Image (cartoon, rainbow, N blue to C red):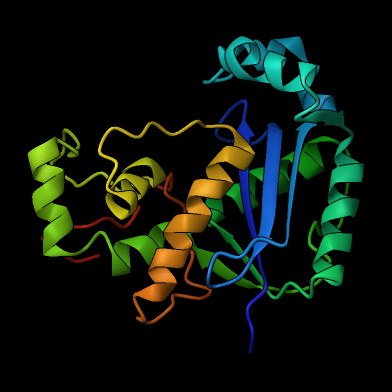
Length: 227
């Protein structure tokens, strides 16, 4: 079956929810993009207390002010965002949802949905789920080449684990050792689309519906070249 993929990313005011920036694109296994969407969640972004406590609060001034000024993003109610996403899923026959840490994005979207007083499901129907983070670890980042590069570049945590975030995966896939992730939703979707394309091109088993939150108590990681 041809894969039509809703690849999304969220930026949140905290790790439990409060999504303020949501972006997605609809793509395929070759990275061909059919449509892109990006919004600031009106109910969250206009809550000064929440936003000033956000981890990336400085981006209010360095990124979002400019994006709003030039019409690159709009303040939009949560209900409108969810309705548009559902309509796009139907129009483009989406059958897969993907994100770099999909469990996290699904969780914070559900929490935001509930926090804003909505009930029911966000997605219009059941979709295959694909965590790009896990896919990248199983295809690209578990290679001896990546281990050697990561160790040489210092892409290793204090605990001795290889760095496997989207920023480092993109550096490896593109050969750009100095790349810095933007940490705005649509920009991150674009780099994750390239990572996803390279993972599919590896022609290895695809870990559909194998989801674990990177921020869970016992996240899986790469140890000695294995996930």
